[in-house]
Image 1: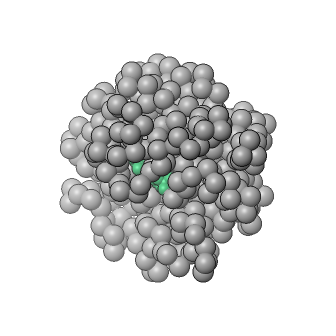
Image 2 (image 1 turned 60 degrees about the vertical axis):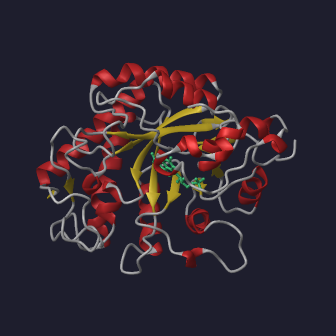
Image 3 (image 1 turned 90 degrees about the horizontal axis):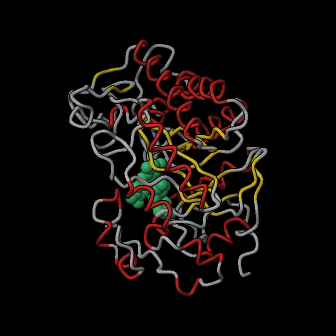
Length: 364
Ligand code: FNR
C-alpha cells in the first residue's frame, strides 16, 4: 500500500470512515424542476465509489434559495424518497453518505425559484446580489429560512444521510451573512463579527437540536474573502471555533468570496485554498476536511502527513476520473486519468469536454 495514511481509517466522533479521501459536494444539475433525484444521480455517485466520505452536491433547503433550475432540493417531504435511495447507493460503496444543504441567498434568481424573488442579508454591499430583483431579508424571512434548514436537516436524517453539511462558504447565504462585503445590516444580524456570525450559529444550533448526536452535523465554512476589506482569516477562524463550541464534530474548510494567494506560505506547492485548512486546524480540537487542487494521491498523502488537513477532499480530480479513489485503493494509481485543470467541468458547464474524463471512458 503506497499511501498508508490516506488509506487508513479515520474516526470522527463515533463514526469510523474507511479512509481519509472525501468526495466533496459538486453540483451536476441533473434534476428537473421538481428538484428530485434521478437515476443519473445514483449512477454518478456509484461510479465515484472509493472515498470514505461522499458528500452529495449542494441541495436547496428552500424554494427561494436555488442555485440553478435543475438543482436538487430537500425542501419538501416528497424529496425524501429519492434522497433515501441515493443515500443507500452511496452506503453500498462503503462510504459514509453525506449531503450538503444550501440556501443561495442573493446568488439565486426568480427564474430558478418559480418566480419567487431572491433574498439577501443586504443588497447594497460592495458585492451585489446576482439579480436586481433581490430584496433584503426581514427578520421573519431569516427565521423562516432557519426553519427551512432545520426541516431539511431532519429530512436528510430520515433519508439516511449520516453526515450533513450546512453550506456556509463560496458566497452563498452563510458567507453573505458573515462577510462585510455582502452584509451591511444594522440590526442584530449585521455589523460586529458576533452579529454577522449570528445567522450561522443560530442555524447550526437549531439543526443540531433537531438531528441529535448520532449524525455528524458539519459546516462547509468559508474562512476568508479575497478582498482585504472582506472577511479576514482571523474572523473566519473565530467562526470555526464558535461552531466547534456549538458541537460541530468536524468542519469542511473552504473560502468565502474568493481566496487570496497570500495564504500560501513561500515555497509551498499546495493550492492556497488547501492552506486554509492548515490555518484553521491548529486552532481547533476537531478534525478538518481540506480541499483545493489535490490532483494525485501523493499530494493527498503529503497533505495529511504534513498536518495540513485530516481528511483530503478531491473535487475535480474525481470528476476527471471517477475511479480516482478506487484506483488508489487498488494500488493502480498509474492508471488514474489526472485532472488537467482545464476547467470545462467547472460549475459542471461542459463536463463532456473534460479530456481526462473522456479518456477514463466516463459517459455521464
Ligand atoms: C463545485 N464546488 C462546489 N462546492 C460546494 O460547496 N458545493 C457544490 O455543490 C459545488 N459544486 C461544484 C461543481 C463543480 C462541477 C465543481 C468543479 C466544483 C466546489 C468544489 O467542491 C471544490 O471546492 C472545488 O472544486 C475545489 O476543489 P478541487 O476541484 O480543486 O479539488
